[in-house]
Image (cartoon, rainbow, N blue to C red; front, side, top):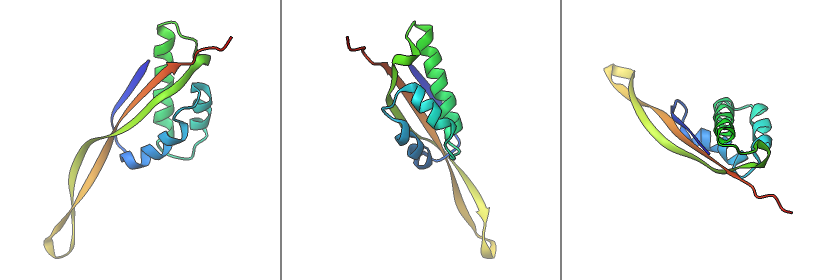
Length: 111
């Protein structure tokens, strides 16, 4: 059960801080935590997690048994922009993007 978010327009360093908080947790607990997080990356990561849970339901897996196996935030493309500076020169601005991979796994029930 996987879900991907490509070229999300926020730097990977900032998104990783949010992903580290929920990695390894149960899907329902992570969904609740991302909903109340005061970080900009919380909203798209919650949407990505709900997409992965929906993908799992499509193949017949119970949502209560899911946990976050892998939450990887990689560097996407970097858009280079110029900003005018003093004396006719210019400085380069790097607008970074993130590629996010979310993998859910099913936790085996102990009997």
